[in-house]
Length: 63
Image: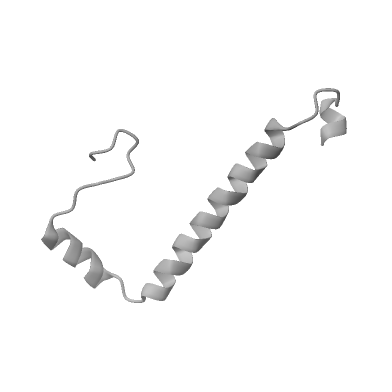
């Protein structure tokens, strides 16, 4: 891994070709990536709602 956040990894050209040959149906890959992206977006929106909680509400009133 090159990035300190762990988002990028180094692949040799032969490793990249090996990964591509293992993907049978690229549509399924895109569907999985889309699902992950949607889940991440929902999680971020939930965090925003929690952070915007009005200070005068009790825990029971907020829920």
